[in-house]
Image (cartoon, rainbow, N blue to C red; front, side, top):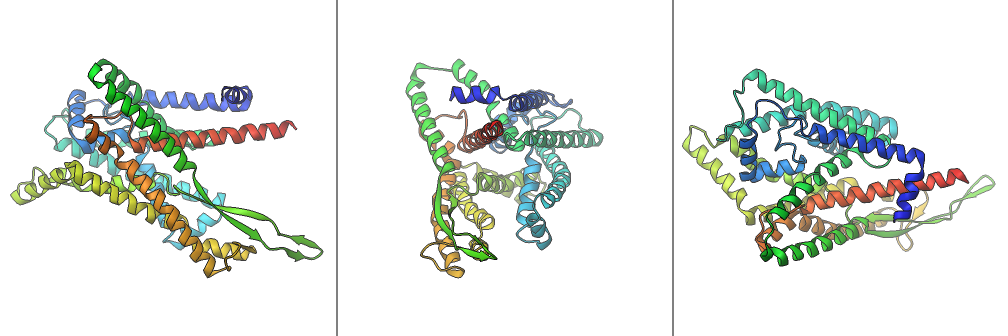
Length: 424
């Protein structure tokens, strides 16, 4: 491994790209520690520690919400906009046509995604600020309308700043910029968590820490195995005569990944799980007694670890099937194979191929959906069994970290391979 890393470092262009990306990530972490004035930091940290909903949002923002920095929303609004346009591509014919146009169409969709990020960021910032205002922690110091608008514009600009940096990182072709930014936000909380664990270490916790370390290793191995796992379907292309030349006659394969949906089902599930208690927070102080009582009841239900875990598991499992059915459509794959003269050995082209692909995909998807659902609720199960309040890194965060590392290493390997071909 060290020889490979040394080989990567010896390539001048690749070394410059890596240093450029590292410099941008340092800039991001500096921005994460630039707080917005007029905030009671101690009250905010105490409120986040006591509120599970806001605490989860803080984890996914890389801890920037806890410090109420200028980039406190991270790239969340941009991811939401990307998912919306991805789903619209299956509903709106004009967007679907743009997706088929290749790079030019994708550039237009990316531009629309950036524009949609602005209102989504403004809406999310307004909701977050109002949610914090509803608390009794006195987080804001003399929050006027002008200050509210100023904060909303500031954090929206911070999100767009991160999106721009993410695109600059993507242009260096060593990984997806937005994913790398999320990865950086997740691992940035590790040093503080490790320091806190060392300071509060007790000899009676030794067995518990060893068990957690073994579980972490097993989880990492499982994440790598499932992330890289795929079902290979052989495809044969018939020979075709065009003039005096013969084309086709080659054998290839169609890979179907076990985890085809990535972490998007988890993001969908988190959004739905957080939405009811998030809305209920606004009505806790309602003047109508039954509305306030209903809001408190909703918050209590979703704070119940058992109900929260079951609902979270079911939503992740269901959204995995939903999103995969959108991304991978057996009918279109079978149609494209038939148009190109390809077929699966032993399966008739057309409808029979589509049915076969659908059957195989559902079986593979079942394993992927169970895996994502288990990963999502893993922190809750471990906390219940071990009696520990917090984990250094959750299952979802671990999935993101491992996926980004695998993707980045794959990009670096391809860059090294291209450089070796250029030398020949």
